[in-house]
Image (tube, rainbow, N blue to C red):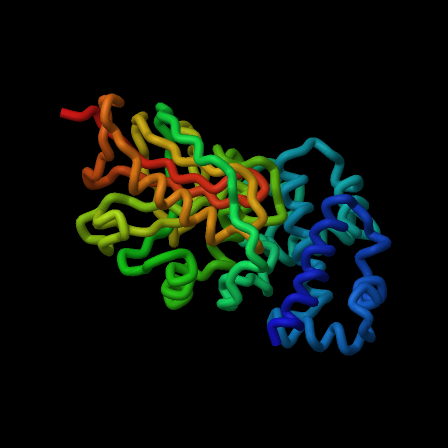
Length: 323
């Protein structure tokens, strides 16, 4: 089955690439099925079997997700946006937009609000499927270690006191109504002004979404021997005054000092495990002697974790002045 997941993932990746490049000619079932060497019928059946949704529905919702962000972040006319994202007319675009989100593009542009976008699905992940790394390539990149002062900001998030790691987090959240991965990532993707958003759309991490850990006596004891609660969310400006989804929490994070352990770009399929180990080892063995700092494990302090293979793997951990 994982071989078919890999094949359907090729289609999913191609859909995002074509939407982003406004290449509507390649966004047909005929073209995409030919890429895999199968009939349209067989490809459609496998797409639904593996993803849980019809090909045409996924394509429509993914187009609308890109279109909503264009409505939110650009001054393009609605007609131009309609044509960019595969709609035949302004009217067709408006109907589809309102049917999906509950308001027209014009209404949304005036008052942007959180909505559940169709994020890109991930059907094939070597680590999730327990396949490990490909080959023997190991990362040789250096770990950059530096101190930073991060200005005060807000953190919009959900949290779980008992989870242990990314996949376990989402498995547990899937049991909480309205807090499954698709819903939460879709809501976060729609929010404007995320501090870590680089405009990416190929993965949640490039659209400003991050894992975080809160030092919390109620949380699970982690590998660093610190009770912490796992969180998932986005950092927002301190003056953010937009709507907060009812199933999410917003907290103020004061200005503070942090230490960053950062590895540069890496090959996810070949290096993820070795990069993770190298960063974890760097944190475990770091000698604060002479720096005047130590880790701050006091309750409420935030640890941010960034995982974006095209840019970096990094932990941002709070520190305090050593006594």
